[in-house]
Length: 318
Ligand SMILES: NC(=O)c1ccc[n+]([C@@H]2O[C@H](COP(=O)([O-])OP(=O)(O)OC[C@H]3O[C@@H](n4cnc5c(N)ncnc54)[C@H](O)[C@@H]3O)[C@@H](O)[C@H]2O)c1
Image 1 (cartoon, protein in one colour):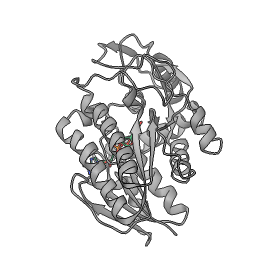
Image 2 (spheres, helix red, strand yellow):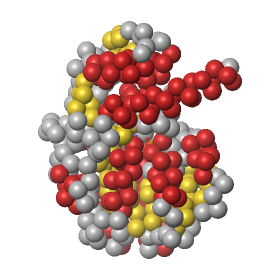
Image 3 (cartoon, protein in one colour):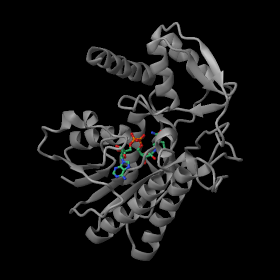
């Protein structure tokens, strides 16, 4: 049995990761300050004696004897990371330093949840890990993009300077149950709008493409990365290379929800990348043939069921 710390464990991805790690017979410490996470996401684990919940802000040091650390603490959606950009940068940078300091002290292996945002508005398509990116250092997204880039630097420097066992994954757009309905991410936005019968808002003309990864595929990749061979540090892309335009996504969601919502177009936000798609050859090679298994429609059906339930609960409480 391993003792595993998951920072940001009460968030969307973290809650699925904690659940999977507990199911596999590990002891899990879930650390979160509940900025964007929610106890509801992990309430089903609270009765388990091998699950521990800690309210803590990762910008402050934290100590515990652990074998592995998954560092996920960081708001991930533009509305939340732009709410307090200085705090976002602190969470990325100081959170990385505190997590790496702990890993060094207790000799734990540590995985960083980085992001495809490190590629910025890419000039290379699709993006291989060797691409250095095209990032604006002073824009509205910079607190997140540059924070995550600095965190990757820190991970590599702790490895080279202190021999800390690090792993870096770059996550591309991921969706699934437990997403925050208010975080403005495209899949949750469209689903909530469709279920409420509101207009579906597309930024720009809707021809910009994204790839969507179902959360179970991501969690599988994260665990494989943590268990990958010594000496393989990444960064490695984890994402679904299937590409869809915003219009295709909206149409699919309208069809699956049976909604009468109409599509409307709003102005494209600044620095919004027009295209992003992962190359996953490295993940396939290093992570035992890992590749996404869940088809968009299958993942959407599960996610729609989750939001449908959530909106019904909200109605009952209103
Ligand atoms: N979901 C995606 O599509 C995606 C894509 C790329 C990268 N990521 C990365 O994966 C990680 C998890 O993302 P998510 O989608 O689950 O987001 P999320 O916002 O649902 O989860 C982040 C969690 O971190 C917690 N947190 C934030 N600041 C904290 C702090 N200072 N101290 C302690 N806890 C803090 C939040 O309360 C939340 O529970 C993030 O690091 C994110 O950058 C996610």
